[in-house]
Length: 385
Image 1: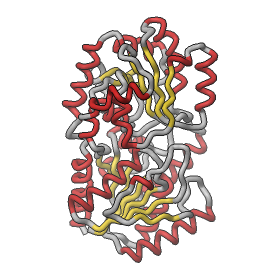
Image 2 (image 1 turned 120 degrees about the horizontal axis):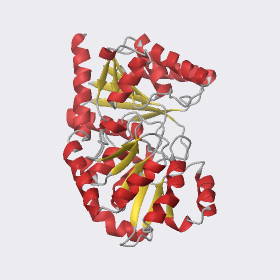
Image 3 (image 1 turned 90 degrees about the vertical axis):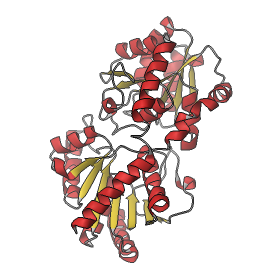
Image 4 (image 1 turned 45 degrees about the vertical axis):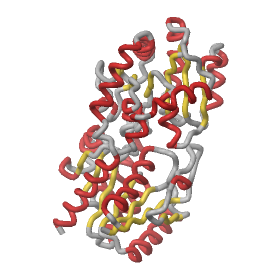
């Protein structure tokens, strides 16, 4: 097949890693011709452009930007059209909100045989201004009419889109976002060296959170729970992996509480460092208020770490309460502290939950499995033509 993937920007993120693995697998596992089109924008999250090896070409369109800009958006649309005509794909597969709308429109108007869109996370969510939310819902309804099928990375995404009347349920297929599972299954070999690197002692119990230091990621709830946790388990250390605009604010709050010696800020790390950093943790926490299905959840379980997560979007599809971790209401602080303390004081429970996660999700989140399912979807719709 000839396949074009289109994504707004190649920052360090789950949707971007998913897309790169899918492109590489189509080339390596199926011998397809693949072109990846992306915008030039980067951000404090870092860029994945340097992570791309050979195997498929990458086209950067400077006018494909994340923010709404009629001037750039029109230029991006016509630039996409020109390149799609030139490449003549069998399949156009779009990702992210902006690339999803412009890419689907361009491919549909050119009568591309198959147009697919992946919903990594809906651009509308409960904590949004209602007018902005309505606008994005209208955009997604429009985009849904310009593709043959939509892939959700979690059942929760399908439910949200159907309940919001974006498209009918039969238009969606859930395919969990894949990753290199072996690196997480074998991550224990990095544990000692990584803990030494960050000054973590053998007795320290590390509670880690991997996310941009940004709004809606929920770091403030873990910070609020920290004093209660430390009062009961003084050996706990908290590790924030990532960077962002709220870093200084969080550091100031922690300092005002006099617990700065119990927090580690690693800064921005590349995706290939994540298995090692998770290996240094004992418990992984996910307190975001908006996420499709955060990659850190299966990554933590594959590495044998239990997770305490807020019950948002697709989290409950991976974090099975009292089996692979604990699922608790969003914004709750007391429950967050209680569940972390329960795990921090029971090494046996941590091992039990981590092992259960490995047994349940190793095959489900293998990127080769993901790509195989995606390609079968391409074949199904091509055969219908």
